[in-house]
Each structure stands twice: as structure tokens, then as C-alpha cells.
Amino acid sequence: MGPPSRRDYSKDLYEGCEGVFNDYLSCRVLPAIQEKNDDDFMLQEFVKRWANHKIMVTKIGRFFHTLDSYYIPRRYLPSLKEVGFGCFLEIVYGKMKVKVKDVVIALINQERQRNEIDGSLVKDVLQIFFEIGKENYSDYYVDDFETDFLTDTTEYYTREGFIGITAAECLKMEKEMGSCYFPSSIVDKLLKIVQGLEKEMTLSDEN
View (cartoon, rainbow, N blue to C red):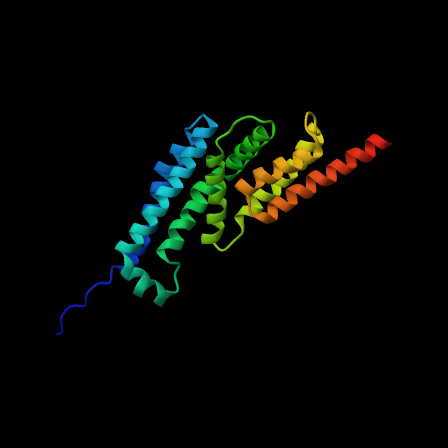
């Protein structure tokens, strides 16, 4: 008789890593974000937990690099990095994206009213929308933030108008603010919204 065959634990390790991601995100990360009653603290926790999760995914990927090198390619499975980010997408991002989006839009509207906000926090949160899409090969930024933000911008200026500010000043403010937070494509869309509403209001006043 030949020597007993050695059991391959690769499948167990792969499934175990996914289980670790799921348990940690469900039991630790999501509750830590949801328990924050203050909106700024909630966004800060969201940003912190995403940063920590990226580090965790990287470390696990390095520790079990043989899975990514041999087991995963042979079975055409998602890499550990894809699994890790996919778990965050489903468990944390999927449950928090609407709340996070609404808070960020509200903060931007506060800035439009010349109230001081934590701009760096807004920028960090929006970066997560970009990164989630990049890691999962889909444009979550557009679907989960940009579309609603542009709609809200139209509603905001339709509701508030340009009270206390000229259209030119408003365009300058949107351009400066947009350049801090958004890619050039969305800045152009913001300016078109303001220009279009300004023309509508001018024509309405003339009539």
C-alpha cells in the first residue's frame, strides 16, 4: 500500500476566509456604524471601517497567498480581495448607502447656505463610492450618489432660488465646491443645472 493521500484544505480555507469577512462585518462593523446617532460621527465611522477593512483584506490575501496563486485560478473563483470587498459591498455598503448619501447631500446643501462643514469628511465618503465601484467593476458612484445628488441640486435651487446671491456668484460657488468633491464631469453638470434654472427664473420674471 502506498502512503495515505494528504487532504487538501484549500477549500476549507477559502470558505473560512469568506466566513471571517461575513461575521466580522455583520457583527462588528455594521453595528458600530449604525449605533452612531450623530450624522458626522456615523460618516467618520463609515470611513474608518472601510479603511480598516481594506487593510484586513490585504493582510488576509497576503497570508493566504497560495490560495490566490493556485487554488482560486484553477477553480475560476473570485480572488480573496474580490470576496472581501464583495462582502463589504453587500453587508455594510448595501445597508448604509442611502443613509450616507442623504447625509452627504444635506451637508453639501448646508455648505451652499454658507454653513461650515467638514469638507474633508465629505470628500472621504465620496471616495468610498468611487472605490466600491472600482473594486467591483461597476459605477456605484453614479447609481448610488450622483443621480440623486443632481436631482436634489435642481430641487434645491428651484426651492431656494438665488436669494442673497447672484447667479454668477452661485456658479462660482458651485464650481469651487464641486472641484473639491467631484470629478470634472459632475462639475459641468452642476453648472448646467444652475445656468438652466437661472434662465428659467429670468424668463419667468420677464413674463
